[in-house]
Image (cartoon, rainbow, N blue to C red; front, top):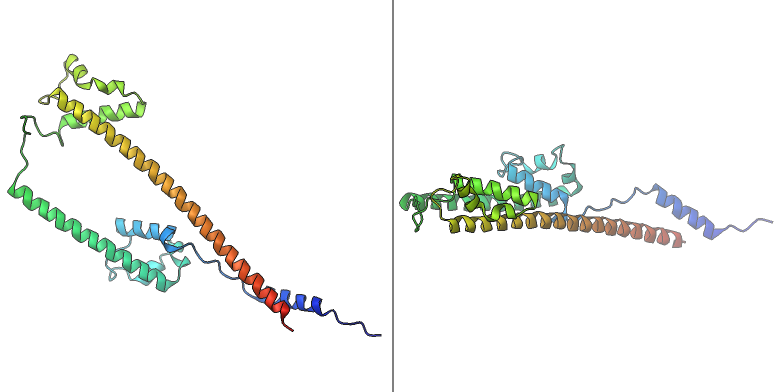
Length: 230
């Protein structure tokens, strides 16, 4: 007596073999807007590693840079479109910056900066007093001891030093507070940058996970369809 053929097992084997013969589906990269590739390309355009003028480095050359493999995670046509958009963006920014600088130069030539302010004090910006105060406030912030700069002016006067010669006490105090606020703001920006980077990395990881799960689901669906074929 001839044994009956096990059709379900045969179908399952056929489907499994078909899946094994198929090349693995490529997991798509993270979205361009949150990708390391975009951040790297922006940096390259800013520092001049990738010229703004496409004639100096064509899109294909940028795409195939050997030390930028993350560029090639994206389809060339999409990369080229994104590259062109970023180049135009930085060209506009550069043009605007040049225009502003030229306007400022014209204004300064026409209306030179006064050597003293309305109180008869020397210009603070660029002065030895500014340099001395920034160093003292920076050291105090690093040591976490603000008390060392609260009476900066009085202590310098008492010691017979004249780093703030020509400036009133209230002027020096005002610049102490301004410098302290600047340091605090810079610390906040550094914290925010770190926080944003962690948030970006989390989004990238989630996007990669979602893409992998999508590919896996599609493959499982194909296996089920193959197994269901007569």
